[in-house]
Length: 254
Image (cartoon, rainbow, N blue to C red; front, side):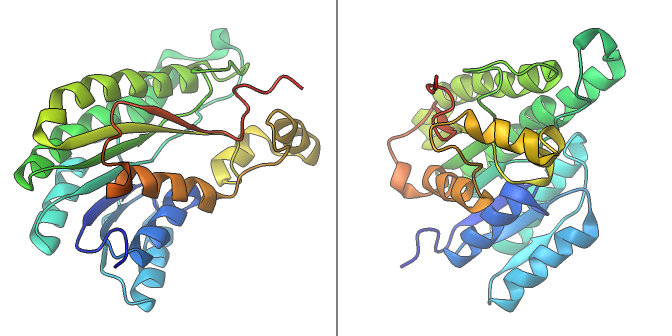
């Protein structure tokens, strides 16, 4: 039996990078999927690939900063597949990169809406659906930036993603008695479109790779495997954690 057989999972940010890798992996592990991203064409490409392999999937494009979209994702999972067991809230943005005084209030709020407020909105609808199923696993993609290391130019990103860790801790304590596990996944440098915005030249990529113990950048599939652990019953006694999957950048000093 595969690890997610008969499980229904929502994945946001599923059209590329870590979200796409997780969608393909979760489908191969037996999950029925409801996928979200802003770009409908690329999202449907991922869904089509999953269907070609025999998986069950719905593509629901939309903006994770909007409450109605999260409600629609849960409704789609419930109507089409019977409920929600897993949510991998992975969508995110770096926002503008540069010194904080150059950041406008609207830019700051936009980053928080995508990275942090979306987590609140997701949980608002996902938690009752999981409770109705008798339990589940809720995972948010955070980052080591602002948690174990500071990167210049990423103030809004770091603040918003760090906020998810606090949200995770509270929700884990509130919903543990109801059989719902809540965790944060903290990737390091990963070869994704968003990662390439931060390091977009060979020299910058080499510098970023040199910060961790492996001296390389992760493939999205490696982070997806960690997400699978947190979303599956393999992590049945794991909740409230900020799980670093950063190649050791948080402890590396050479």
